[in-house]
Structure formats: structure tokens, C-alpha cells
Length: 108
Image (tube, one colour):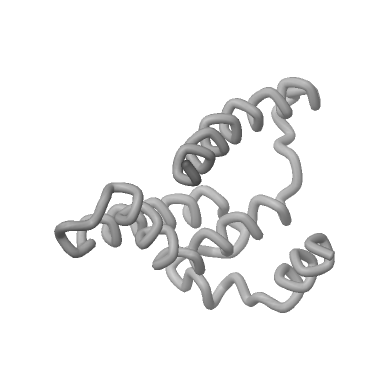
């Protein structure tokens, strides 16, 4: 069922409206827009919150930019830089493993 929802999101979402300053075919520009949004949102969090709370709120505020960035990466497909699938999966694991550890830490 999640695959169907993701597919529906990709088909029904207009990536151009999510990031009007960046072309939908340019993942690097969408990534920069997402990071800029995260920095701005994080800087404007109310005082007195925990760091994790600030991070969650910033991620929530920038969900549209994140979705546009992920959709552009998925539309572009795997990189054509000569890396094998094994290297690509290790790169992905190196990104995901610290993220899942961080999320696991939040649950404790």
C-alpha cells in the first residue's frame, strides 16, 4: 500500500509549484532550496524547545521542498556515473544508518 501512495503522490504532485525557483528536472537546485528552507526554519524556532523539537518543526515546515527534491531524484533514476549497484547501496546505507539511529534515539 505505501508504494501505491508514493506512486499517487508522484503522479498527482506538481513539482514545479512546490519549488517555483527551481526547475523540476534539477535535483541539485531542489536540494539547495530544501537545505535553505531547513536553515531558515531552524533559525526561527521559538526559544525553550529542545534541539530535537527544533529539528522536527523545521522538517515539518519544509516538507513541500523535501517532497519535491525526493520526487526529482526518483524521476531522475540512478546516477549514470559508472558506480555499481553495490557501491550505490553502500552509499545509501551510509546515509540511512545514522538517520535511523537518530530516529531510534528519539523514541527512547
